[in-house]
Image (cartoon, rainbow, N blue to C red; front, side):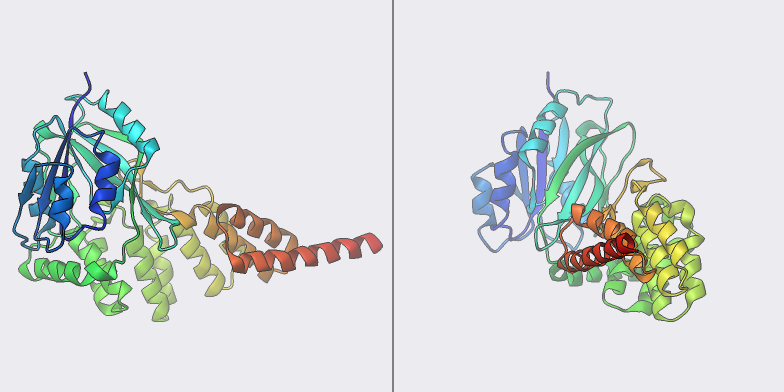
Length: 369
């Protein structure tokens, strides 16, 4: 007999998104619990078309508190969460239906891929996320913002994806930074808050604040407990900006044991060797290493966060650029063409056209000579 799943969601002013989310999932889950945190639009009216299990939670600037309240309303064997701007494709709905037939009390949680998208609809990033939990295991959400679920006991990693629509993060960044700063000032902030706060300050080009908090994470020795490649790359870029090339190089190379399966790491280090040290051969070697990366989160042994274009559009493009600088049009053309196999790019398309002419001329000259 298939296990039953309670869907638990927290929402606020999501009238434009909620129906798309619930339309795709309503026939697969066995219960829908909607917790509204203060909508002033028609979100609740939309929710009533799908369920009468609608609850209210006073927003206290704490995402985990709201999510844990939503989980308290679940009555089925397993609990699944979605955000209102998430959707599930037909292919992944079929996989979810199959998953229900194998879920049992020995599985405490299920990890799926979480895919985010750019404004043009292209795939941006892929994250591993604890998506379904055994209700009896009582796993809780932690963190006032950038919250995450506990992952205790036996877990299952499945080849399924949830798609998160493009979202302008600037709309939520101020709120999130306010919550993170409150946690920091109160002394409650853990390494995860320092990590995300440091990255937020980096995105705002507040480099001294960013360096301070990202280094707190690294110096704690806890950087390996979560997927931290962004922290190292941000610090590297800060030190490059400040002209401190030794620190820029060391922050990456001294932490290669945490980052060696990340294409983002090899590409960033390769660019440093190319642009700052003019060591093109070493740069090309690093770009080629990037092409063999799987993006695994080494400390957990599962697929980690991946910025999609780094696997493999960007390293192929960087190899093309490097071979152009080496006056090697044949190899440059080969790698640029490979880059285009993964993603269209008008600049690269123009370079391919020019390089094709150069290679043809070189071939003809060789034939004549």
